[in-house]
Amino acid sequence: MVIATPRSPRHVDAMSIPVVELSGIHKSFGANAVLRGISLIANEGEVITLIGSSGSGKSTLLRCINLLEVPEQGQVRIGGEDVSLSLPGPHRRPTNETQIRRIRSELGMVFQSFNLWSHMSVLDNVMAAPLRVQGRDAADVRAEAMATLAKVGLAEKAEAWPAELSGGQQQRAAIARALCINPRVMLFDEPTSALDPELQVEVTRVIRLLADEGRTMVLVTHDMGLARAISSRVLFLHQGLIEEEAPPETLFTAPKSARVAQFLKASSGG
Image 1 (tube, rainbow, N blue to C red):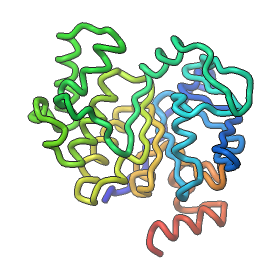
Image 2 (image 1 turned 30 degrees about the horizontal axis):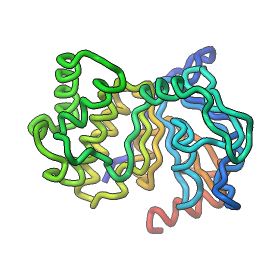
Image 3 (image 1 turned 180 degrees about the vertical axis):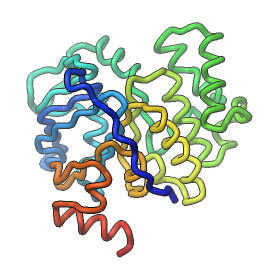
Image 4 (image 1 turned 60 degrees about the vertical axis):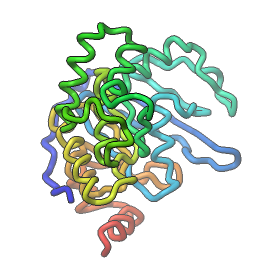
C-alpha cells in the first residue's frame, strides 16, 4: 500500500509554456465516442493523474499525447510546439513524420504489459532507444543506463533476460528504459495493474521517487493511494469528459461530483 502524504505544491510560472497541452480532444472508435472534447495541461514538474472507471477514456487520452492514437479533432502541443496533423476527421494523421519521431523520442512511455524485447538483455533494452533513435555515444549511454538501472534497483540484473525477471522487475526495467532517453515527460499507462500487490510496491516506490525528483508525469492508474500520494492534480474522466479536476487533497476528501464520490467510495471498499 502507498501511504498518502500530500505532495508539496510547486510554483508554476504563469508565463511558462506547458510541457503538454491537449485542447478539445475528440476520439472515436467506430460509433463509440471515447473522448468528447477534453483539454489537459501539464506544466513543468507537475504530476497529472487520470482516474475513472474502465472505458472512461483515460488510456486513450494518454496515448493521444504521443500520437499512438490520433485525435479526430483537437490540438496536441508538446513544449509549446503544435503537432502537425491533417484536417479534422476520422482519417486524420500526422503530416510530419520527422516531427513525430523527434517528439516521441522525448516522451518516455511505460505500458501496462512491460513490452520489453525478449531477445535482448535488460541493459540492451534500456540502451536501445538512446543508441538507435537518439544516436548518442555508446559509452555514455551504457554508463547512464547502468546508473538508471541502479536507481530502479536493478543494477544486478543488467545482463539478465526479461524472462528471468519477476513482473515487478520487468516493469522497473521498462521504467528505466523510458528514463534513459532523458524524456521531457513520463507517461504511465496503468503501470501496476498487471502486478500482484507485493510487486506493485516495488513499482510504486520507483514512481514516487520520480515524483519527488520533480519529473513531469502524466499517469493513468486505478491505484487511488498512489494517485493521492504523488499527484499535483487529479482528473476524473467519465463518459469521455472531465467530470472533475482538483488537487488530490480536495478531490479525495471533498469531491464536488456525486459520480466522483461514488467512484471513490467503491474504490475504497466502502
